[in-house]
Image (cartoon, helix red, strand yellow):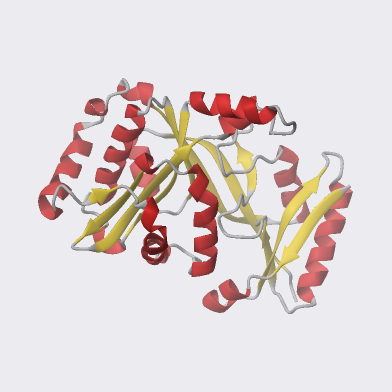
Length: 314
């Protein structure tokens, strides 16, 4: 038994000038390579019939919805809003003929590394943040105005697309999709762990972290029975991890220390709230800023996801 879905992202194809199909919702048992082969054969035939030249995935099907097969970190628990696939999924894909398209990374940082005190962050971090504050003012960061949600989202949507436009093969996210994802996130958001940067009235940065609810869901056995919701309510008070989901900076402000200033304020906030460790997920391996910051701070890669690509030939 197995499942698979196929689709075409017409917006992305139009923006990038490609003819690509995608697959997702892939599930198959460890002894089911023959079934996987048959499902991919069907998807390839379906894609060729629609004039597509290549296929890539897994995508489920929005760009930020649990994409990629896990290839490293099987021993760890998946952080909130990420997938957990068994090793044979990637093995089957490579056996079928798929090649690597891109990897996405999850970082882990244990606050014990700094003695649970931001004063112990490397001095260079404080110097960079102070330099940015002297240049642009110390009061550029604020938490979101949840009561003004309808005005916050359009500004953040514009920032999101502008920030990520520099990445390879990025196509702009439509406002309707961004708005829908923001609404999905809203019940999970703790406004004290979200920071928006504004310079001269212009939104130039966003840093967002949410409690790692996976810890509570695990304790509640996935909310399968009515009393599991009580277990979840109790467990969410003891969540130890914070999951850092978004850091986007207007490219005009790269290299001036804004990202460092935002992360420093984030660290202060999450330590005040008693978190023990931070997850950073997910970021593309080619992201020039996020990877540099994570490595500079001493975070380690603890999970890796891979999206695959294959030419459909002539």
